[in-house]
Length: 463
Image 1: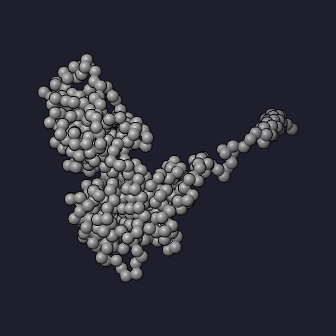
Image 2 (image 1 turned 90 degrees about the vertical axis):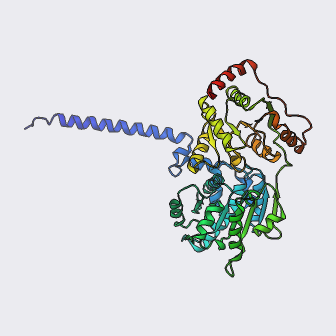
Image 3 (image 1 turned 45 degrees about the vertical axis):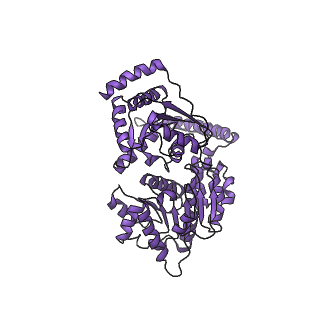
């Protein structure tokens, strides 16, 4: 008896068998083709992280004589730092191998953060390997004169410490004290701080900072500014505490001091050893060879407004404008805001969060416009600034050099333009004499037809 539906069943199975045979033949052909093709990184199941493969191919041999630990070297490769800068090459062997104190003089952007950061990470990593992964006391303290520089240094150290398990936190004014206290409870090995907030917390016997006198590594960045009025009192209190209350038998502290100028007075104040490693890579006071300098002679402050607006229209690009006072920044921001230039102010009386926000916006915009007092002139590492405008003649030649040094970085071209009124001529002449300039700065070319239209618009904005 043949039941309904049975004739179809064998046919279905036979068809399935034919399909299976066909699939197997097709697979064998594909496998044969695959074996005949050269293998790629993607064919290797054990190498599913392409970035690691690329990283391994980077030539990091230039770091071989610098004693950089493997986890830090891995982070440097990711950051594309394939060779040390001059200050790093001269500093690292003495700081790591010989455990020497270091006094360095180098310009912003020279790589000095890693010149002290890599030795500190090396020594702390060795200590962690000896005692295990448990919490450690505070190992390193980095002091900077400004909050912005402290944040910048912390970010650089965190990037280098990515694979070490070493914690880095900020202790600075202007940000939430509660949040900073929570971070300190995690017992980070490195604290990057400004003197005022740090002394405040040390004086309150804050956990993890109470044994600050026993830190094994001390860094003072921009040391010449740190001993100026305003920072000096808090700094000397901290140093007095750190130098007086060392526990008997504690290992000698390793000091790193970076400054625009190196003096014996600085060494005595900080407690640097008698024979530190000294690295001085600063040029004689002057501007970079790739910097083009010029001036625009103006008849009045109103004329300066117009000439500045003309420049911004005619020469788009990331521009940093320096003023000599906070009031000047505020006035100029209001004028340029009406002219729809989207100016970003930066000065000491702003809330810290707003200062950081403006810096981030300036960095991220190829046509960013930042109006600043000299709080931004030193220490901050802002890449890609094409133009520096001195809205007022700087008070000293040193200020002029440091302002102008925000552009023409790392052999890139840059432009510095000084706007000057007749009453500023004596200060301008003094700057030229100090810099050994026998001739005036060349006049910046201005299109008179375009300037006329600009004058009308600025006049309307000021009404």
